[in-house]
Amino acid sequence: MDESLLTPYYEKIANQLNDIIPGDWNEIALYAEELGDTRSAIFYFNQSAGADFIHCGKIPDIYGVDRKIYFNLMKAISITVKELRDEYINQEMQAWSALTFLLNRNFRFRTEFQYEIIKEVGSYERGIYWAYEKLKVIPKDDFE
Picture 1 (cartoon, rainbow, N blue to C red):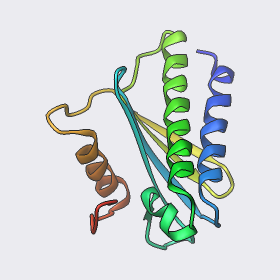
Picture 2 (picture 1 turned 90 degrees about the vertical axis):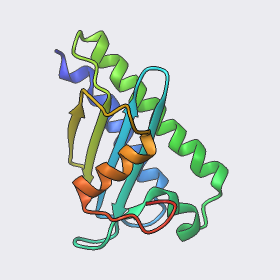
Picture 3 (picture 1 turned 135 degrees about the vertical axis):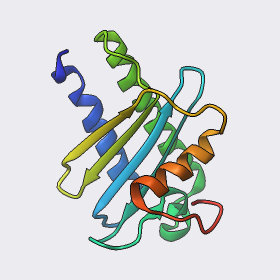
């Protein structure tokens, strides 16, 4: 595997996440599913070390971002995740179903891949489960 072919995708995801949050942030945790015919992406971020994580769906309300712009930026992240997965396949690596992308404020990132997902539940429920397992976020409203 040629890691240098994957680096541009990771950098693009990091920059897209940074661009969608108008304010300062400390950590971002992205969960994205790419199942071939369907895809989804959500992320949480916190504004300082130890602060509660905020669901990406709250960005329009917190920062006054136009919802159409927000959804277009989220779609762009999903497309980049698909391109990353396609590159993995082009490199003859095992196709993953879900990606966790953890980014800190110094733009250092870590990735985790999930090769099997529970198909008996939808992506929304899997996202809730991921947020709880990875970030200890307990759902409080429609966006969590």
